Length: 111
Image: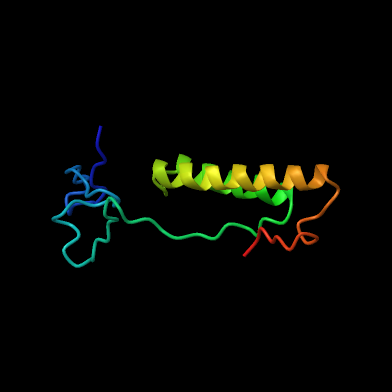
């Protein structure tokens, strides 16, 4: 299924031609507008929270999964970020079992 143009013609009917991807209008009804579409490899950048606690790691994981679900990042990027978050979580667990905080060892997991 594809989106159709929502422009209302002089007769009162709706155009219903195929709409341009990411817009509500067809090519004929958008000549005056600049249609900006994302290229396949073009994604918006985002910042993860500083990784100073297990809660912040969960928030970062949630952000990555949310962006993956909304197709704002590639699967390969999400896998890399999740792998790094898992490593940070394991490191934090190991350090808490030893009774040390990340600051004690001079390790800072945030930016």
